Each structure stands twice: as C-alpha cells, then as structure tokens.
Length: 375
Image 1 (cartoon, helix red, strand yellow):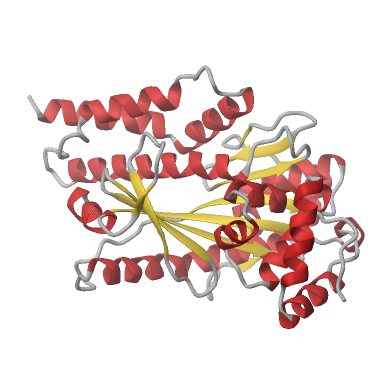
Image 2 (image 1 turned 120 degrees about the horizontal axis):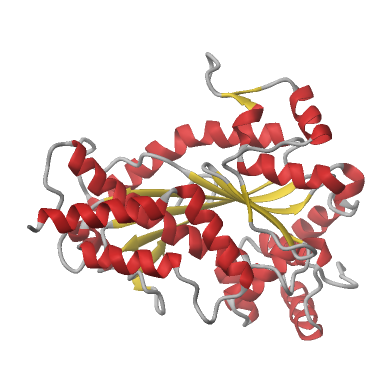
C-alpha cells in the first residue's frame, strides 16, 4: 500500500500525473480550485498543503486504481533525493504563441467557447491537443488568439534547456498555424501565420546557491548566450564551459530587468522571456498572475504589430469599433498606471514586462496612427 507521511507540492503533482489528469480536472476531482492546485505544484518540495488538503490528497490516493498507485510509487521512487543533492533543475515552461486573425474570425471561434469572466480584455478559452504539451487556446474579441503551451522539464543544464527552447520554436510555429487552419476550416495558404513565441519559465528547483542562483535566473530570461542559433543543423549548444563560466563569474545584460523582492522571489524579464523563482510561497506571485500579465501583453503586442504592418504596407490602418484608438488609449492607461488593489510585486512585474517588451511605445504609436487615419 502506497502512503504519504506528509504531502508536498511536488507529490501532489506526481499524484495528478499518475492519475493522468490535467490540472483543471484534478482540481475538480479534489473539489478545490485550479489556483489551489497551481499553488501546490509551483511550491514544489518546499510547500506543504494545509491539513485539510493533506486529507483530501490521502483520500484521492486511496481511491486511485492499482495502476495509478503504481505509477505514483514509481515516480516517487525516482524523486526521493533532494534536487540540491542531485544537481537537478526543475522548471515549468510556459510558451505563448500569439496570432492576429481579425475580429470576425475571433467571433467565429468564441461562439463555441466558454467566456472568461472578470477580465477587461474580453476573451474565451478552450483546451486543444498538442503532442507534447498541455495547451490552452485563448481567443480575444479584439482579433488575437494566443496558444499557451505548458511543459515540465528536468534538464541537466541550462544550456540543454536553451537548445530545446529554440529548437521547439521551429515546430511550435507551424503547429500553431496548422491548428488555426483546422479550427477556422480554411485553406493552408489563407490561414494566419504566427510570427514568434514568448517564453516564461517558472523555476521550482535548482542546484545553485548565492550569486550563481541569481545568474541562473538571468540566463533563463536571456538564453541566447548559451546557444549557437546559426549552427548548420539548427540551434546547437555552446561548449559547456560557457555556462560554467557565466555561473561562476556572473552575467548581466542591459535589456534584463529584475522584478523580484528580497526574501520572496528572484525574477527577471528580458526581450525573449521571463524567469521567476518563488522563495516564499505565501508572499510571492503565483504562476496564474504571471500568465495573466503575459497573455495581456502578448495580445496587445500582436494587435499593435498588425497596425504597424498595415502602415508598412502603405495602408491607412483601421480597426473595427470598439477596437479603435480609444481602445488602445484605455489599454495604455491600464498597463502603465498603478491600481489601488495592486501589490508592489504586481507593479514591479508589470513595469518590467512592459518595458522589456516595448509595448508602451507600440501602444502610443498605434493609437496615434488609428486616430490620424480617421481624419
């Protein structure tokens, strides 16, 4: 009989995976919120659910099938040694693939989806199949769709993770294009084509200490320094000595902005991605808060890029109401003005992601272009 003396966030995740359930299905099965399960798992070994939650997890394990209990036991057997002792890196990769499809196409897709309540950017979401990731498709009323891909990794090195990241982009983009083609029931040549992928890394375990830990988060947010992206066979790892040297001596880049809080988190935002590690589960940001911010920023970045593309093609940019220049003025205000209910951590996160993405300038330029085209 498999038993757990004290559940941690990591063991909760192992049970969910052994039951072959998504995070949302697992939460419903236990009778708790999605956010609760997300908080458990993001806390890893350092977080212990409440006594009531411990009992709920005991019950779920007791009701599991023999096969599921065997999978859980096997996973725990390979997971008993502390990550710091084995040099293990554990990270959740969140990738965002945005595409502008237009308001009419977005309405077509949203008609068959469940609306997301309580968000100022009107949207709906649905789970879609991806061969290697959990994937949620967000469709925004302003005409942008965003594929959100979630994958857990235990790479041997940061360089190995960086190579996977760049190589996976080459398959993520055509996959997203083909999925859109199927959802919209359109010819391949007419289907919108995604242009880029933005990554967010949620680090749950790593072997580094002191300054090296801080450097590791910087490298996660700007992994290009570990990869030869122009190699003949595609992105390839640089010599392992590069990573070792950077971890030993430190790494910085003028485009990397910190938004962590001492004793609570280590966090960096860069042009190509965001990296976050929580040190105080109760006081740090949640993965849901980071994801919500990135979904908003990437949606509006993609929207303003479409306006920029119209201008570059020699057109007078236009957008259907209510997504004209007033929509962009409101978006700019929401993303650049502090809110009474925001914590200092939320403000730091939003400011860092906004600045490194360059979205504030894009919003102003797109707003001016739409207003001028009306005159």
